[in-house]
Length: 264
Ligand SMILES: Cc1cc2nc3c(=O)[nH]c(=O)nc-3n(C[C@H](O)[C@H](O)[C@H](O)COP(=O)(O)OP(=O)(O)OC[C@H]3O[C@@H](n4cnc5c(N)ncnc54)[C@H](O)[C@@H]3O)c2cc1C
Image 1 (cartoon, rainbow, N blue to C red):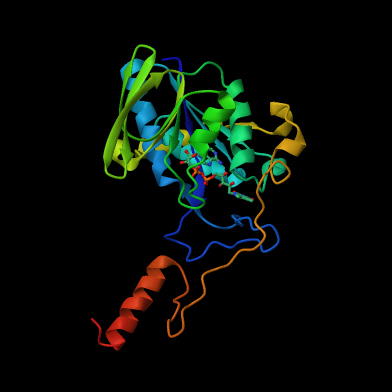
Image 2: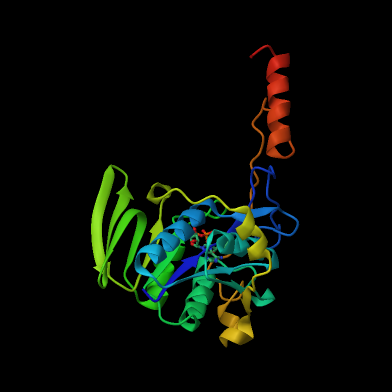
């Protein structure tokens, strides 16, 4: 294979924040100062790309659209073994819905050179629409298979098992193709200490609006077909008590309250 492209996203680390702040005006998640991690499904996507490289050759490119702090998610892909990492970062990209996000990703993918496969995670931990793989397939006019739990590459062809509610389906189609992967597909490799040090000094390619030659009206909030008119944070139910703070602290408080109430 020539190139496998893996789309990754940084998501809030929900084990360290109890609630992610939302801008009441735009409805967008406020990520500044919120610790982030590589979206868990995307670790499986990177792992599958690396296994395919080991079996069939080629290079693995990881790409994300996000704020500057999304670099750390890309660094994780380099630590795992990706050959190069690309950050699509520009203030004009902020506030994008899935349409505008997939548009920018698709335009950048055109610039990455010939590829046989684009791998996405099945969904993200934060927005979790699962739109990205189908949207990329549409923009790039490629076949797609979602929720892939195992796959096999034959010359010019990909055959996959995809998870459905009552079992699985077997589907095949020609390469190049877009797929999204579920967690059953593999066990991601652990991050090795030596690779961590190496990845810290590796270059991350950054492309903005001008690099991609894009029209400002088609990206970010301006290029988004959907708006978030209202955001409704969950309200505590009558008689319920909400425990604030990061998850470890909240769990400690919960256990102590349950002990006080002699429930445990
Ligand atoms: C009106 C509106 C406003 C929004 N404003 C903002 C905002 O201001 N800031 C913000 O961060 N989000 C914003 N979002 C959310 C943003 O649109 C989504 O995070 C993004 O489009 C991806 O959708 P998803 O998270 O549902 O991904 P899914 O479709 O669930 O993701 C599936 C897979 O696609 C890939 N993928 C997803 N996102 C990316 C990405 N960014 N780069 C590369 N690969 C990716 C990953 O492999 C992932 O596992 C907004 C959404 C809406 C509807």
